[in-house]
Amino acid sequence: MVNILIVEDDTNLRNALIKALSKSQYNCAGAGSLQEAIEAIHQGSYDVVLLDLKLPDAEGVQAIRKVKELSDAKVIVITGYGDIKTAVESIKAGAYDFIQKPFNLDILEADINRAVKEKLTEEENLTLKELIKKGMDYTLETKNPQFAKILSLCEKYAKTDTNILLIGETGTGKEVLARYIHEISHRRDRPFLVVECTCIPHELFESELFGHEKGAFTGASQRKKGLIEMAKGGTLFLDEVGELPTHIQPKLLRFIETKRFRRLGSVKEEFADVRIISATNKDLKALCEKGQFREDLYYRLSVLEIRLLPLRERKEDIPLLVRFFLNRWNKKISTKAMEKLKNYPWKGNIRELKNLIERACILAEEEYIDNYLFASYEKHESLEKELFEDMPDLELLEARYTAYLLKVLKDVDQVAKVLRCSKRTVYRKLKVLKERELNNKG
Ligand SMILES: Nc1ncnc2c1ncn2[C@@H]1O[C@H](COP(=O)(O)OP(=O)(O)OP(=O)(O)O)[C@@H](O)[C@H]1O
Image (cartoon, rainbow, N blue to C red):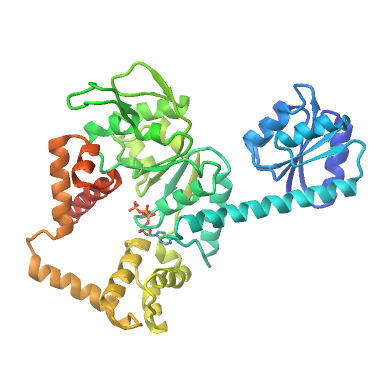
């Protein structure tokens, strides 16, 4: 259904347009001033805005600019002042077309249809272009109606700047969805930065997030931008937000409310327009009840909520994902093996599936990987146990060394420099250590 907002201060004309266009299967809403239009845009999502250029609270192209700033709707200007200068200015300000009053309804409808078609093509091209740019490192193809609904929610939410909370078990693709939302939003050309809340040591958290001034603490040899400042205009993804240290929570809340923050050791306020997408596999409400998470922050982070499905509830998508992972390796599996994969419990969700397929692809020399799937998995695990019960493997060794460096250097940038890797890799190694330690305890 096409959504149209009719911004016209002449009540009779507005109502007549709503009535006529609603008959043609358009979903119409009306606004009598720019202020009313702004409120309507905040509440709904419109494909086309029909905009009168002479409104009680806005004159000329100012209204076009405001509407374009707030939404990606196509703006068709309808005006009684049909001079060339106004028409040129309107198009320059971002209007799609310019129609002079009195107008013929058929012409208006044809114009609306053209605008809608153009908007759809632009959106499709954008999504495709972005996915190609990213090397298609994920697939959102689905046969699951619930996941399809989740994707259309993402598309809707991507058009807003509101904070989103993604809830789901580990490995269900929360970060993938966060990236997707960013990539199809107007922020796509700005950074998408990840804050791994479990990995950043508590004492470094504030400086990592908000940055610091030179001399703010021992070891702060120069001014450093925090992740919020680096993500300006883009999206910040707070992974495992339930682990956000309690002393950071009020500071983050203040930032969300005011878009302002201070670098550690500075009195100057900085401004950053950043959209926050958070993810959790915990029950944040329960954490609030236990006093471990601020309720006000929880409400701010979860204005929009998306619950991801565990893979066992998306069984029909398993073949799609398997083929996606296999494609990279030019390998195949039999129908029988695929059935086995469909009925596996997948506690680690898509991550576990991906790892299993990749491991089998590496081991299998032949085209079909069947024999290397579960067999290789089990054999690998038991072999590992037998031979290396108490010996750290390379992954663990690296993770321990990274944690050791961080303890000594007290700065993630320094660690990344020493290891000649990205900060992201440092965080990943710390995460591995935490997970391996937890597994050992369990
Ligand atoms: N739709 C997808 N297509 C291809 N790969 C995917 C998809 N979703 C997730 N993956 C892969 O599965 C792994 C886990 O995904 P991701 O990190 O997004 O999950 P998560 O829910 O954020 O996990 P965690 O809670 O542990 O941080 C990644 O390697 C990712 O590339």
